[in-house]
Length: 187
Length: 195
Image 1 (cartoon, chains in turn purple, cyan):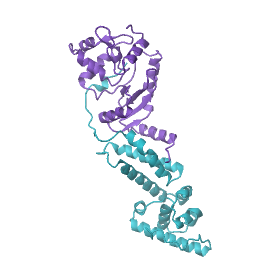
Image 2 (cartoon, rainbow over the protein chains, first blue to last red):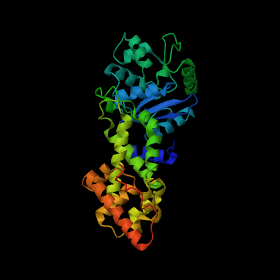
Image 3 (tube, rainbow over the protein chains, first blue to last red):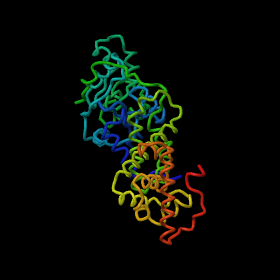
Image 4 (cartoon, each protein chain N blue to C red):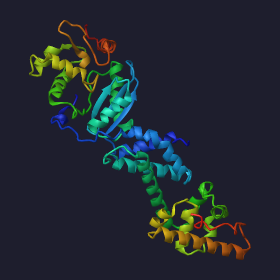
């Protein structure tokens, strides 16, 4: 079968993005902690995932944001550049627009508090719950961390148990430890 | 600073649960659609037609209500793109259309008369034909279009397109016979006769 030339494939994707004919653009980025699936709507970044099953991830994105899901690098270039700087230790804060429109209001409130946790520090689930005005909701905060759609940028790796244990991480404890070590956090 | 201000209000998007991500559909059918265009057009034109087909698909994709017949849906768009291109080509100066046609001659109809037309150069051969007959012959034998599509391109009917192409071919045969430049296919059935 005749295969689509790579330059034509790239041209189609560029044109589709330029015309705004997409609900979600996505790409796979290599990183020191493994491949990351990045996705953005026309509002902003909506996903940074360690999901080893991109097809499942794409189906979820399609259901959440719309079916015009297309692999394209242009909308993600700034995100990739900032992640590169972060992993090189040259960036402590991300300057990105985020799309959390598919997140429930409670979780979004928690994620906004999470975004304020400084680089190189850790906090606890209970503290985050209290700061969000929901004392006693530490378990729900744990659920919000587990379903954080934008890992790394929204730093759920900086949330640990009350006794300082790493407890858990959507990307696995090894990645959590690597990220905290990169940031120079005292564990 | 991370900007969360645009997400102050939560609205759950209303989207179909049944349409797969476009990327999956695109990867499944892109080579097939490109091959379809390459079988009918020169490389550059095929690339343009491929892109136009997929962009049109993206423009309407979110309005689809189910995932059945996605392949047929893409081919419908592809045929529409070809018909539109042919319609535009028919309105351009014939020299341009003839140039495209000669590039496409390797993909032209296997019909003997059509092959003779392509091999002989459509611009020169059809130069003396009436405009409608000339357009029908070019669209049928250079672009390999169905008579339904030719009828739409010429803003007439399928039957009228078939008659125009047949009349054009008959006229060409007479011209070729008179000039002593017979392609040697005079005993072949007319292109419309076997369909």
